Length: 498
Image (cartoon, rainbow, N blue to C red; front, side, top):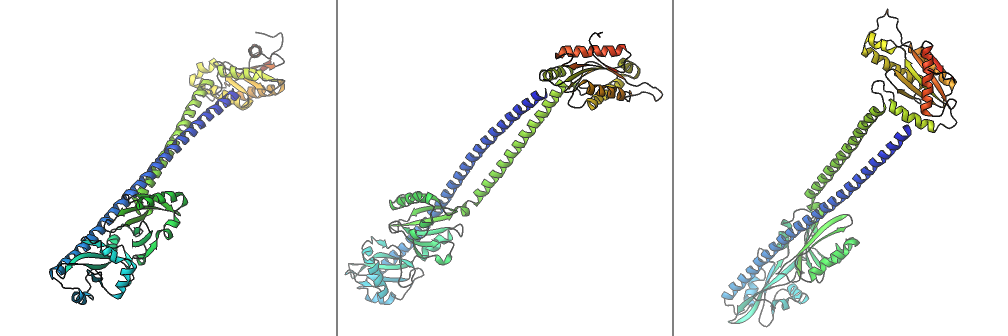
C-alpha cells in the first residue's frame, strides 16, 4: 500500500511539475511578446516625437529665412526707388553699416563688378558666390560657409536691384547662421538634443544645438562624428537613411545605437537652402523617460501578477493535495481510532504476504474483553475513548512498521512482516500488561474495572502463506484464548479450533 501510494505521489508530483513548466513557458513567451510590443511602441513614440521636433524647427528656420529674404527684397526695392546712377556713393555710405541681423552688405553691378571688402571678395571667389547671385529671381541664397570676417558660419542673400535707369544689379546681404541656430536651440526639449544642418552630398555638418554650448556653430563631418560610432548591427539602416536624404525623399526616422546609447535621428527638408537638410538627433533616454516609467510599471505589475498567480497555483495545488490526503486517509483509516480500516488492511497485508519471500510474518487477532460492558456501564463516549487509547497502545507496542487495523467494533488485526513467534509474543505480553492501565471515562475511583484484551496469533510461512487462511488461523487462536478465560494470548496449533 505504501509503495503504491509513493508511486502515485511521484506520478502526481510529476504531473504538477509538468503543469508548472508549461505555465512558466507560456508566461515567458507572453512576457517576451509583451516586452517586444512595448519596445516597439517606445521606438515609434521616439520616432514620432523626434519627427515633430524636426518639422517644427525646420518650419521655424524656413520662416526665419523667409523673413531675411523679405528684408533683402525690401532693401533692394528701397534703393531702386532712389534711382541710383551707380553703386559707388551708396556703397561708400553703407559699407560700414550693420543691421540688427546682417553683418555686411554690398552690390554686384551689371558688369559683375563686386562692391565689397577684400575679405568678402575672397569669399566670393572661394565659395563661387557670383554664380549664386545670377540665380536671384528675385532672391537667391547661398549655402552656409565660414566667414573670413567673423570665423562663424554665414550665408548670403542676393536680391535684384535696378540702377542707372534700367541697369540690373544685385544687392547682397550676409547673415550669421546663428540667427537660425538660435531658433533651433530654443525649440529643443532637452540638453541632450542635437540639431545639425547637414549637406547630403558632402556630409558637412553645422551644429545648431547640442549639449556642448561651445560647439554650437562649429563645422564637422558626419563620417568623423556620429557615423563612425554607430554599432555595426545598425550601420545598414543608417546607410539606407542617408540614401533617402541624398535622393531628396521626405524626412525619414532612424533608430540606432552608438555603444550602449540609443538614438533617434530624423531629417527634414529646408526648401530655401538647397542641398542642406535639418537633422535632429535625440537620445532615447531623453525622450522616453515617461515611456520607460510606463515600461517599468508594466514589468513590475506583470511580475507581481505572475508571482501572485504562481503562489495561488502552488497554494491551490497544496490545498488540493491536503484535501486529497484527507480523503485518502478517510478511505483507508478508521475515523475514530486512526488506524487502518478493514479494506485497506486486507489490500496492504496481501501485498506484503505476496513479497514476503523467506522472511517470517505474524498475523495477530486482538479483541477487547467484554467491551459491551464498557458501553453499557459507562456510555458510548467512554467506549470511544477506550477504543482510541487501545489503538494508540497498539501503535506504540507494535510500531509503525506493522499493519494495524480496526477490523470490527472492538476487534483489531495486526500483521508484522519480518517478525518471528518469539518477537511477536513479547509484544503480546506487553500489550496484555499495558492494556490494564486504560480506564474508561466517567469510571469512579472505587470502581476497580480495568480493560483487558485477548490475542491470537498465526505464523507465516509455518502455518500458512495464504492471507485468508492465515487470518482464519489467527482468529481460531483468539477463540481458544477466549475459551480459556480471556486476558491472555495464544498461538494457533494444529488440532485446535472453535
